[in-house]
Length: 159
Image (cartoon, rainbow, N blue to C red; front, side, top):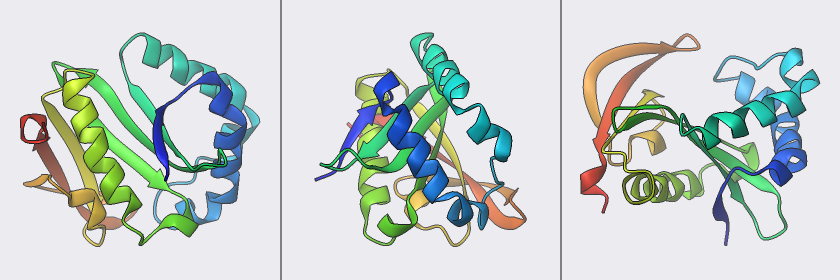
């Protein structure tokens, strides 16, 4: 059973592999991170851990029993008891319900571990997993040229 883990320094090699192996898959629906992301990966990973230690963000990876990273799930721009939720899943793990289950788990962690009361997200109209438990705000957004909506969730409903 995959486990959601808080991002740590030792996740770097598996996370780098995850990003490389899924780069084309991600680029089909979200902006590509670019070559600089991969060239500067170690420095970027360290910077994320610094942000996390400062309480500005909460980064997580979904790890299988072999240590392979199946997805990343992030709570970013933490302020005023709220944060933005974002995630990406490996291509081979889509359509299995893992994203939905992990988002629900992260929403509970947001409330119980991080003291967050509100989460925001944006999702393409065809991305139903992202909507689980979130309520549309009515604000339309563009995500890599695809129509989407903004969503909000009160984490009090998750505990």
